[in-house]
Image 1 (cartoon, rainbow, N blue to C red):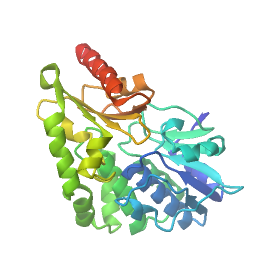
Image 2: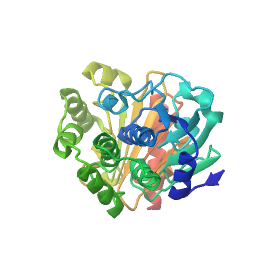
Image 3: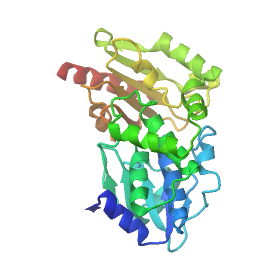
Image 4: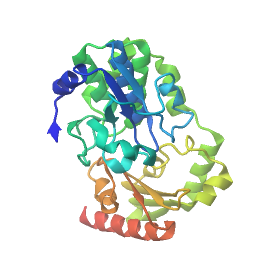
Length: 319
């Protein structure tokens, strides 16, 4: 595996002509925005580039990939993953293509190298910032649609610039997006100021059912699938719901477990500076960042909750 700089990644992308981009499971604004921006940037340079359709994309972010996808990898395509920290983050239907992936562009500090080449910068708040930097190195055209995709990526991964991962470079990239003419107010309204009734109802349920531990500094929320079905929430309603318990006054680290349709438990951990969310998720084969990390636990929800609670208590005793 060869670690690349931004310049070296740009040179590699300039040296080839046909690309297919892969995003991660339960895709968020960063993996979708980063891939859309990279696809548009490569096309502006005369390259052939598409995104493999993610089977789990939700209506909230579907607009980012409109007109950019194709259904299958073709001979001659160079496969690139965007915002994917490990093979386990890929949708199951993408796994047969794993051996063909040639480049990984990512910003996760806790990650597994799985490609011959990688550009990874854990100091970047979002993968979208990395993609913007690489496209600048390549001399790509930064039009409004591309800038909008980058803004979605960097703003969602920083909680609209509220999270501790936000840096001067994040603001500088956002400013470039603004200069490209994006609709800042409309995007921010849609991404951060609009709640569905379903989202408000699940937040109310969380307030009633979350478990506060260690003097109220730790929050554990366990959400059975039946509850989500009864409330009638969508995946868009549940987007980043794991950050909600972390906003309770006094909570330093919050873990949320959701029961999936396949019966496993999806773990999401959010932490304030001074705590490391990956110390929880890596115990279950996951990863991420100090402030936000995740894992999939192949256990019944109740058993997963016991193990996560034990891990949380161990972490707080160490801090």
